[in-house]
Length: 247
Image 1 (cartoon, rainbow, N blue to C red):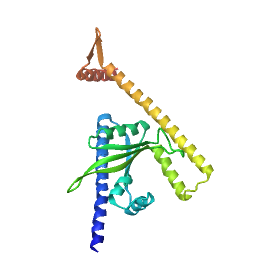
Image 2: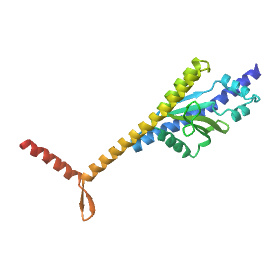
Image 3: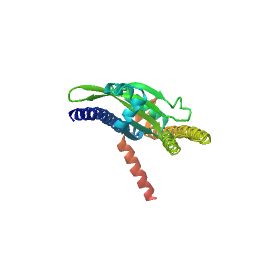
Image 4: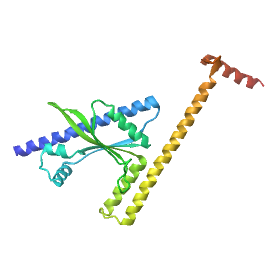
């Protein structure tokens, strides 16, 4: 009984370590979201979703890998015990978020699998990162791995439906449907490109209009630019309205 209690305490503490790493990473992402929204009036992250593997799933996976069951072996050979999925609007946002994570001095990206530049044969696209997160326990500091998947809304939609189809067919999907799934993935990738192009064009139009509005509030004398005082602009606006009302 004492041995069972000791093992239970060990596995509980082991799982808590990954939970703390996931909580820490989610907090960092939330801060980046708010900062980016404040600085750029734009949020590259649509939503996030976290998950933890169950102890049963962890032990089944370590057995499939043919490794001895021990906590050091689990830490070495299983890097996706804790996982975080980040969904973005555009492909450029995916790489922007990766750069944000790289800029965090206490995080280390130890592995990258770019299934966007090199999609899987079935059409799956996503950026996978293994990120080492520092976790401060009561008696030590640990570097804990968290798997981060970053994808667009279209990529996430396709991946979700593909998973449901494979589950329904118990992974024995007819070849015709596999081909259609690949074509659907290609369509999702084309949609991402089109939406990003539209986003860029609209952003450029907005910048051009803001530049025109700012130019209208300046006067140029001998190649020198002067800002028209806000009070004078307000006076002109008020008098203009008054003049129209007297006609």
